[in-house]
Image (cartoon, rainbow, N blue to C red; front, side):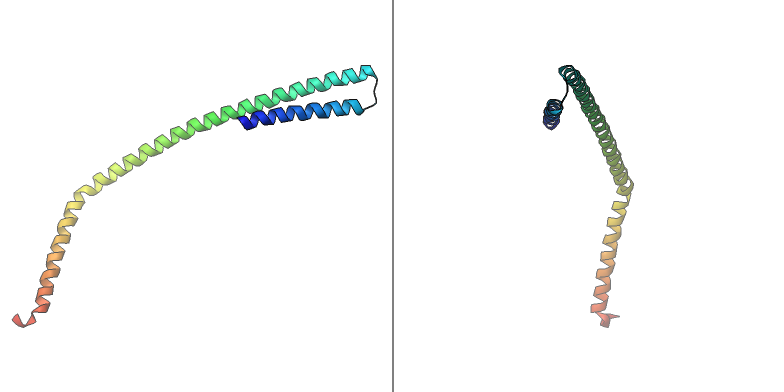
Length: 122
């Protein structure tokens, strides 16, 4: 916000200096000079008003995007939590069976090792 404010001030000062230098260096009568100064002043006010409106529009858009982003992050987070819970629920019954299968395989491997080590007893 500070950058926008300093930009606005710089823009205004630059516009004023430019308008003043153009008006003062142009050979015109006093009446024409005053008329031009009045027109340039009005144009400057309008430019500043448009700039303020643009800044306000940008601020509103940032607020909207931020709100939408927060909402989306919450939705994605909830979906991810639900997916993880569902995954755990789906694999839980298989974990016990896998553990028992691994134990059974280990016992089979151990018995095969014993048989390989002592082939003479067969």
